[in-house]
Image (cartoon, rainbow, N blue to C red; front, side, top):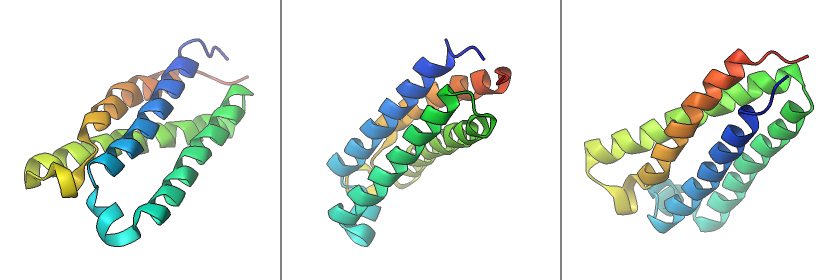
Amino acid sequence: MTMNKVVPLYLALLAFHILHVFEEIWGRFWIMNQVFGLGLFLVVNWMLVCIPLAIFYFLWRGNRAARWLAMIYAVVMILNGVGHNVTTIVTGRYFDGFAGGISGIGLIVTGIPLLYQLRAVRPA
């Protein structure tokens, strides 16, 4: 399996994912303020970053199931980026609303090529 294109795209998507969490905290994403609180929000997002790290490890080792899980991760991140941008545009609320649109663009821009590369790669 050639990982020359997959590895940098996956790591870039993971970096945008982490930046996305920071942007949600900075912009006071409504779920953090009204549902979870900062502590629980950080715990949930820590788990949501650790899972893709584990997927990356098994993907790197050539695991077939990890390829499918990485594709699911890419789709979820693309939808996350689209969702933040659409809801911000529709509601007109970024701060105390649907913060995450700026890094959401990065999720979309790296998630789509990653998904394409993962579909093209066949694990050994």
